[in-house]
Image (cartoon, rainbow, N blue to C red):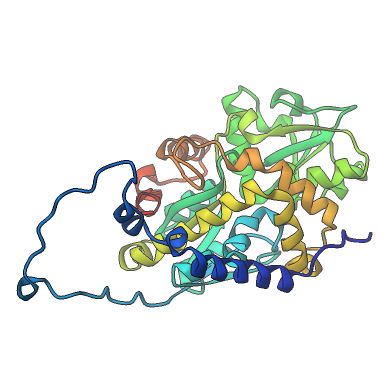
Amino acid sequence: MTRTQHQPLNQRLLTRRQVLQRSAVAGGALLAGPAVLAACGNDDEPAPTTTAAPATTAAPATTAAPVSMADISFQLGWLKLVQFGGHFMAEEMGYFEEENVNANFISGGPGIDPIADVASGAALIGDGPVSGILLARAGGAPLVAIGAIFNRSPLSFMSFADNPIRTLQDMVGQTVAVQDRYRTQLESLLEGAGIDPSDVDLVPGTGDPAVLVNGQVDTFQGFSTSQGVALQQQGFELATAHVADLGDPSYSNVFYVTEDTLANRKDELIRWMRADQRGHQYAVNNPEETARIVQDLYGDENGQSIEEATGSALAQVDLIKGHPNGLLWIDEEVFASVEQFLWDSGGIETRVPASEAMTTEILEGI
């Protein structure tokens, strides 16, 4: 499949930077900080009367200490797809550079465990599901969630429209491919709906839609914004049940760090989060451009066509935004709800207080 032709990435970015540089020279106030803009005042208001202090009493000028470069590695939960487009746009637009952050995003994939990498110090930040963070804490890993890409998870159970599975009750007597890390939570949801999980044929799933296309299962678990979009573009008519529709209010692609990182690198995390939030805002406002750039950079790795990437970028916009506090925000209530699922189903043997498993202090520091 031939990709859409467009301006080369390096040429496009060079032009953007040139424009910014010229704008700064031609109208420095446009790029000035809030203090400088406030000093310009309102031309309609009279200037206040002031008396200049003698030169001998003027306070000496001070220069803020330079901010040291922060090297922050992030272990992605999967390949470099457009679902992570906000990270990559923060890089491409220079937002990390403005915060003096050297951001390094490491590809995920089969056999890569971001939780283990962050817990061991191999990466500073990782991403994963709420349940994964809670299970890790219950097992002794001191992980703390600090934000999330998806305010409403695109994680879904997808089936063909001629045999639709849209509710937990629809799963009874059906073969359901569920990812290993989500099985405990699904069983808890089934039990909460009065359904014996043994009445559902639960089989391991990897997110590969081939098991649905080949008739091996009746529904499979994956991202509606990724596998779902790809199937629809191939002409398949789908019925989609987001986990939120099944009673799981969870987030997806939740960012987490260790307690030690949170305590000792808070300022660096705030700078990183501020840049990343701007990148996600850009991606939400410009999904098609984001898809083109991601595919220019990582299309050979992720194997998606530009059409698939664009469809994903458009489909995920409403799932990313929606929190009243803004992008990337998380709530303690969601973590408490998922923790209760795990406790009720026996997935965890030690209670994990939601207030210890997550914090908004980094987002509040932006």
